[in-house]
Length: 354
Image (cartoon, rainbow, N blue to C red; front, side, top):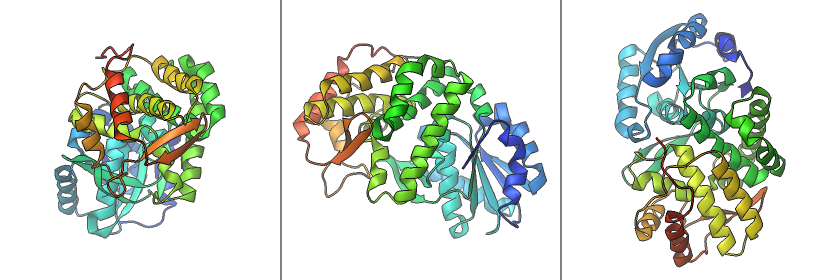
């Protein structure tokens, strides 16, 4: 993974280091293309770019039909097993294009150019790819790391404010799960990050990249340690699925999920109340979240039961026992989970955002 301002202009040179290929295909979304298509195509001009494929990057379009459509377009464009796919965009673009790269002709080379904060600190690193089913998020996918990840923070400059703030929740996640120094930095500097101040942003992004790379290097296929990256996500994926991906950006769902997981950890006597309050306070300082889900807690728990993190029908939650350290538990009573979900609805500062 490379992170550097101005890195996008060197994309061709970096891709050439991967060796011979029969053509580069750029996969991105109309939203990303509006701001970056010209610069992306120019950056790939030196490596035989043979086409640009656009697809919807909304979460509800992260589906098998979208992946099939892209595969068929690649066939028509003449992409063979020595092609290189370049995924340029946020988490949905990376997940879908990565899944296509993993499965098209049983696997072609993949390069990520993440253009959102969520993608730069999290989703572009580590090789998880996938699409959603109506029954749940990311239920079909593969572990398929990109051969190259090129993260240029200049691409964050065109992100809408809400989408940028959505990425900050994933940054907070790393502070909670494994980096107390980062968490303390965020408490002191969250306003600077919201304002996209360069030094603060570079520090936080690099810390997250290092943390994700360290975790993944020890557990590539999520058989143990890597599960800590799911802090807040058991709740978040249920919130996204229940609302058909129409209410929350992914990071916003993770924000609510972290609040819920911190409260659950406190109620289950894993986490001191003062530290749970610090986690919730930092999440809320990023900005107003869309309203907490008003769905029946029993339904949300049922959706969690379909999550890929479930084992033998038992829900698994990543919960902090102190800031900077978490553990995975599977013996928390269902009633306690439901109580936490009910209390989220009446939480203060849950006004909606546009």
